[in-house]
Length: 367
Image 1: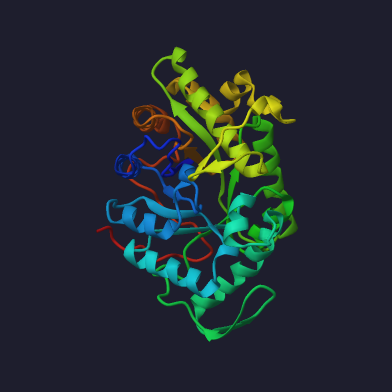
Image 2: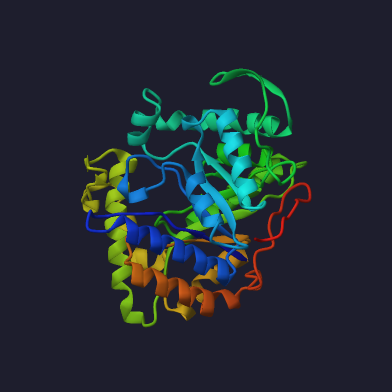
């Protein structure tokens, strides 16, 4: 089992200086690069201080200049907010700048609030239709001249400029939850990004079952990589659990606000709603969070991760961004690299051996 990192530029309060945040985020990425993580992911979000990422390609270009081997992914580019020609070119340019280290993740979008501003009139639940049309268009543009006459985009003959260094294109990833999205991902040769939120391990098992069903329904498709994410915190002593759990609860209060449009957003800062008022409040029980999230001492984390490895999770995605303090984030990542990763054979401390795709890839030397 290999490891990925999700790290956002997140501000939960105006007291967090953007310059300190910028420096901390880059240092976390550099720690992951030196520690043998396979991929680091940057998100796309708009007008939200909690997830600063108006263009993930800009962030990844910055990280590329300060790292040597970790692969650089979008998690995810939101299909309804992009034109295919522009998106294909952005991927190609980042692949050039990073010397062939791009992993391209695409999704349908998460928050209706963002849709109301970036794609007015479009329901978040309809975003997957744009992703389904976008995927084959991008592949065609990366191949060469192509004319498109679709439902959501129409354009005369064009191509991607520049084209990616990796041929025929960088590895593709889809953020998947529904069985339909798993099927679309497998049909299009895409790897899987999944997230069980704060739900029990049974939720991860259900995602893996959808993955296997999609493979069975598409017998000629290659087997993609299956990755799953959890909020993660590794600490020195068992009695330190309250800090990450309380941070996660605050984050979930803001996330549920955005996901379900239940509260306001002031100056880009989402209000924290009362989780006890939700029908799903049992998901936020402190005991359940301690069990379901990847929180613990190094030995506890190894024990928690072993069932993921046994299930057949190819990559575990370590999410560092949920309001934990800078000091705690760095200590957690340090412990994970030094004491957890060596327990898993796939965590190659010499550096990531990526990508895995249907054809061999060019792998340019590090800078």
